[in-house]
Length: 189
Length: 178
Image (cartoon, rainbow over all chains, first blue to last red; front, side, top):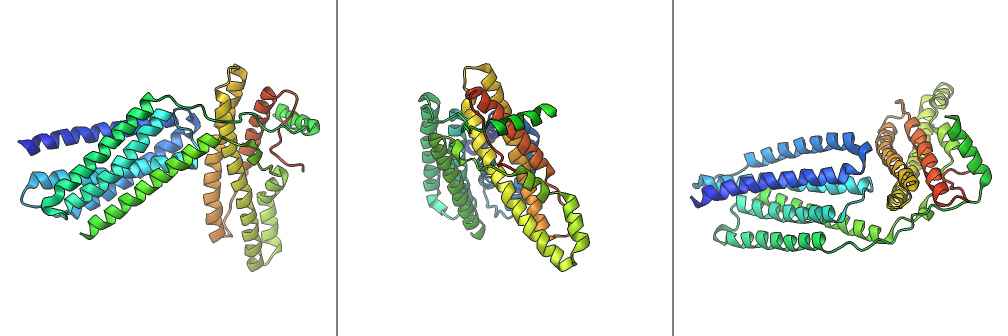
């Protein structure tokens, strides 16, 4: 009964996390419409690769007598691979294109990245039955990380953003000739 | 056991990447974009470099071995130009993002246009660099980076428009004198 409920809520959590990751992508790209198509293609490709990798990893699992515990652990590991991969891709994509994050979205993404990485490590060790009877230590680690990230999310969502020091003005060149030439070229189009 | 160890290492690497990128992003945001980092590009020289007719001319005139050497050198120079264009686009994106918050709707519109052009240029430079490195492996293959130059010129136009709106008395230079 306990493990049945656990599995149900676990699947629910996984679905919610994927929805949140999708929302983070949407919010990040909302301000950059020209990147939309490329991002969609790349995300789809990376997602397919990650699901493929997760399926291969799941195939290497060593099930035990308790099928439901094994199922949860193998599922947890496979899902963590996909989530972790998607969040790393999200950060690499944003860094490559120098995209600007909104503070709450950045906080959520960072928290998700940290929890996903720690979850991946924990689920991998759990699915491998490496800690044996001491596996509850991994549960503590996983939950401690999650709670720390919840505090971080609260901080990001509740504490107002400091105004960034930016110099928005482009450098001035006192070059009227060049300006005129470029303007003429633009007008000729 | 082995799979678990590999995945734990993978998780540590992923955590390292995410934290490092987050920290560098935070530092960069605090510092802000510095327009002085923009390096002017000689667009005409770049256009000559990527002109397929020049490649064709060299192909006809030079022995194959020599042509491959020259082509590699030209591709290397092309890569350097594309990298500078990509860096300039990144700086201008920051400038555009900062100007988006402006109360003046004309500046905000010009800033949005600048950001859009900069994003497109970043996308084009990514693809162009990948193709240049591929072409370095096969110097005989066809390659054109015309889109990068065209996009750079559009970006230059947007930057000048924004610069003009922000500072009506002066002009902005993204291309060096030809």
